[in-house]
Length: 124
Image (cartoon, rainbow, N blue to C red; front, side):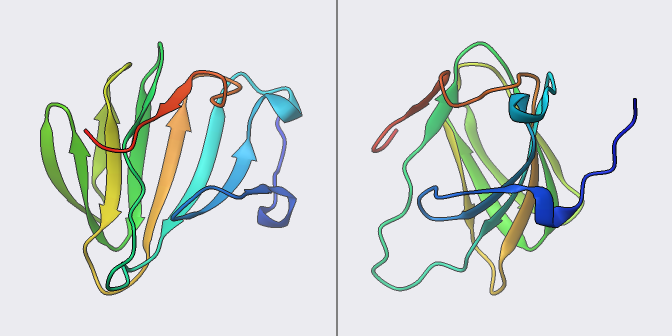
């Protein structure tokens, strides 16, 4: 059965360096995860989040608003509204805001729970 999910029903996650609203995951019996992520403008002297990877599955990122850069083991990509980034399984990556307004991303994962298979690193 099709379902309508409202923004207020999403789960707010306390993840470092960004605001994350998880709209879809295994918690609502889905087979995928969908998140709305807001990366704020970097403040002078602020420690930035290190890279992470997802064991065994891709991450697909759609840039809804703002400008940034996705850094990965295979290189750097400049991104802006309308761009799509496909990160392969097991590749370290991180997306940073390089603009003057929040960077808003829609992140899709083909798994119901990304927590157990996500690994964080201090640097590349």
